[in-house]
Image 1: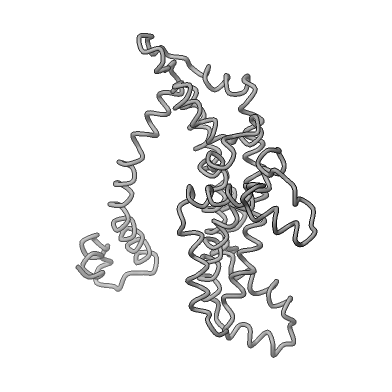
Image 2 (image 1 turned 180 degrees about the vertical axis):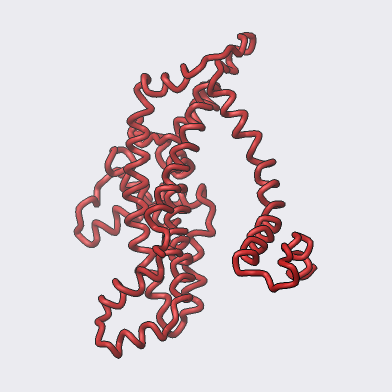
Length: 315
């Protein structure tokens, strides 16, 4: 079915034989857009709606699977209050936020530099663009195990390389200390996710017309001025998309923590997602687990909304 036929079926209003105005055409285009995305939205609601509703229901009830005979009584906001009265939730929240900020900032800077490099014309650029996707294509569990081996002080190459270069940290058991464990996690996370951000930013760079830079050079603009006043503003939509995806991924980080440190040493690398897994699958407390899940969803929506408000293109 053609676009014209779909628009006709959406009943484009008639104005007594006169051609439709711009506002009428825009409303018809909007209705067409809604009709095209409706099947996908309905499918996503069917797939994700039940888990969300079930978690929300759990968060207001006492549901502990280890007490199979106990009634699932209404708890009100007790489970949410328990999050802030127990010792683990607030520190895990602060660690999660700190990891999100540090990892996203460092990875975005590195990815922007990588995207700018790949945007330039050089021999072997196509091979290089394909090669940077390899870390992103490797499953997170595999890459995390790889980095656990590399940070091992006996069999890994990190300590060995630092020793050859006479740099500090050559005799460090990286995953045994709080700050060194976080440093190892940040390195492994960056290796995995910088290519993802770089590809998004590279796509945004390719949409910027080259005439803009030629005009800037004719006006005497330096490379830094062109980057700051043209590249960054024109890259804003792609940067917003990359930040939303990467920030939410970092905030919900679990698998790399689980594989590399298991939340340790002690509880110093536990994040909210790790606490959520522990509440559900170890303590089988679906009430508290549901409360953590709902908190994760709410905070994620707030983060995504904040990024959109800050990064959306100014009109």
